[in-house]
Image 1 (cartoon, rainbow, N blue to C red):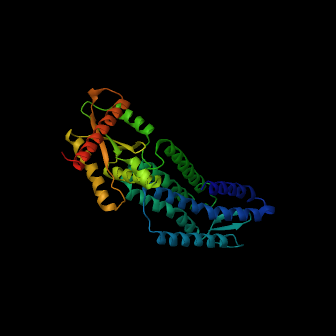
Image 2 (image 1 turned 180 degrees about the vertical axis):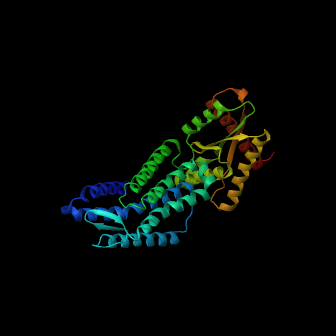
Image 3 (image 1 turned 120 degrees about the vertical axis):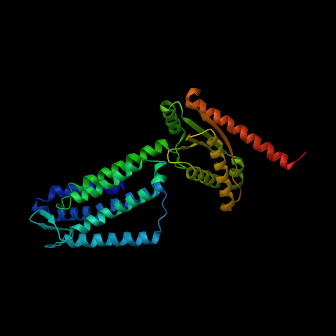
Length: 344
């Protein structure tokens, strides 16, 4: 996408520079053609980006057919538009460019991927909310559409092009930010981001607020890696991450704490909710084991504790407390397992 935008910007600069120079009319025409071809392609990249962050499963065949039709239609209209006297996307005459009879088709082809991405964002709102700010993504997707609407009376790209480039820049900045604050394997918050968000929660919590903390660890994970390989181990981590994300609320903090450890921080309405959610996670893992047909069942240890305003200790200390409770839980599970194998 980066190279597409660079070519787009260079072509647009050349177009503006040569449009009033008759001796460079052929260069102007080629640059205008390249710009017209590339602009609608940016929307496809945005749609793929939205698909990836929302984990939307498109049926490939309809999408490929639709994209191919739009791409070939755009190429056909773009070629026709640069022919002498043509009046499709635009009409070129004496160094001036005016809207053609079918300029609206260019607007539709350009805007359609952004409109589809808007539908995906709305349909996956709760999924996106767990990791991003959906309103920001809606705004980003609307920029090119508004740019095309503003361009309806003028095919000079002075409005549509900046809106598309801004969208691209925001995507790049979002990607860089996510690399800093998320875990590369699961897409969950990393340990740094968890500590930051938990500190903010503690700082602004009210007297009657209850915060539940859960430290979750995959039992015998080293055995999984040794027996089935690291790729299988990575897939197990991703599976557990997906389960935790599915069970959590949009305002919960779900993090990969490190290795095979995960942390969930959530607001609670009552003390009993701490235990209820703990069992919800255990049941979710059990359900996964029954349906997955994996080579080895996934077992977890959980440490859970409530944080209140009067506790008045740091986020790091709270994480240490639930980590200690998790290891006690793992030890208890191991002892029970050994007793079942060798009853007295």
